[in-house]
Image (cartoon, rainbow, N blue to C red; front, side):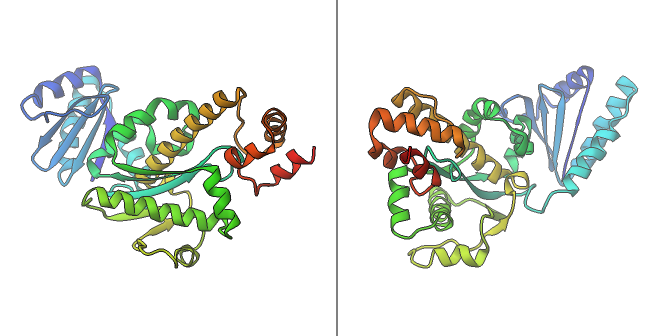
Length: 308
């Protein structure tokens, strides 16, 4: 059970004093403290948000709800109702120990494909929510650049970067995009699991094809992980997938920036007309052979670039 709400500065001071002898040695980022009270883990953040997790979370939350009411004369029930409604809207693999994988770069003409698998334990849920990962669909590239480093340092993960040269070679060997993604997801999932004996309730993959097709793509692989939950828009339902999405995006953005510096041009994302125009400029300066190194040459952009 997880309950959270905001408290006033007065209640924060009371909580700091009450839990001073129960605090854990390590404090999550942006937290004032994290403490253990019987079966409940209490985390108080600098923002005033307090999170209660555990079997007795409701009991401890009620104590501080009443304290806040006495101190300020205000109720915190509205916030709790909002939390419960949000929790009820989520699937069973949110407040759990999970491994999840996600990829970026598959729709971009320039830049590599990045696939990441991450492990999120229940202990890290509050940390990620405080960073704003809970609403990952709303996270901008600017915010990703700010929070990704904290996630990378805290969350176990495995990343694979598929260069454009590797991608183009796989395409020439009759590997379509979905097969490539299946191979890479399988690779990072197995790679992460080799690092430690993680306790997991679910392994979640952001669904890009049917489960049957996914495993069909892997029929020639010597080792395949099969206990997977596939779901569309998984980054909004499962924190480990959200972390993988953010880490992959962060690496992708940095790789695009590096490529831009190397070629002395701003590299656009996506596969629009803007991409075509930049591609023409790059080919004029460096020759058409460079596309095999920096672009996915099976995209229609290649024909548009070279025909002009």
